[in-house]
Length: 370
Image (cartoon, rainbow, N blue to C red; front, side):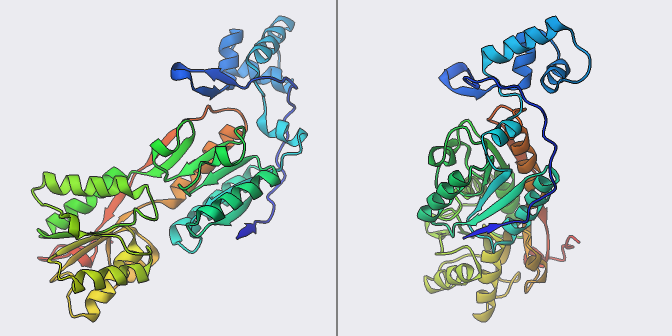
């Protein structure tokens, strides 16, 4: 499903030089990196500001300086303004945003931030919801290629966007494992820290027999979170058995409900649970309550995300808070830099997470966070 957002304000269109040729530099290991204005400045022996003045034909510079800058641009095949170049080639002032589940609060909050930041820069967005389907994802990228978008922000990890479209489209991935996205930019939560925080909180609450409700089948990035959780438990002297790792068919409330049903039906012995999304955790707690299992007296529960409903759970849910707004800010900023030719691909941004302690892990009179 594609949702075309309303167009943003018209952006300024800088004058660009019409040089053609390769826009990449050979790097160690044989991979190619996008040429930036810094590379041109280094090649010409001038400052970045001077290169900008020559490209935009404003300010003071000598004829010799202009000649050296133009020669450097030609040698490197630099495109001084990717956005203006795209306009000349009839590339749209449009960015594709691809998410696996638009009803998920994390993605809806992220989209709102991305939309506003790109609108401020004169770009509109086209939103695609893939429902975790590889076929749907491929259709989305085919549609974006036909629309001649100037960039893509993808929160899916099933398909290589650049291979599915064309290699000159800037791409920023959200929460995609680095090994699945070589040579592109990635913005993600610090999942190692997140798994560590969840493990420590369960152990602090008195948990010695942990259970993990995994989201890895739907969000591959959570594999990092899972490993950090298990490793931290081991460091604290607590073992996570293989049969105490459950992977429900969905990561929503129904998935959490199903995971709790399975755990109870199998007679698994557990006194603490880490659910890798808040919706899983809330569904899990609800099913425990229906079966007479008390949270936190019998079982403590930790979620991940800090969605709005987490604070209204029964009881309110302890969780690891992500910041979809900060992730959206960084994704939009990074993509704009790439579109304008100001950034070589390969940036990695880790966004900090934090533990929010509420009643679901409050044993022994521990005070909840606000």
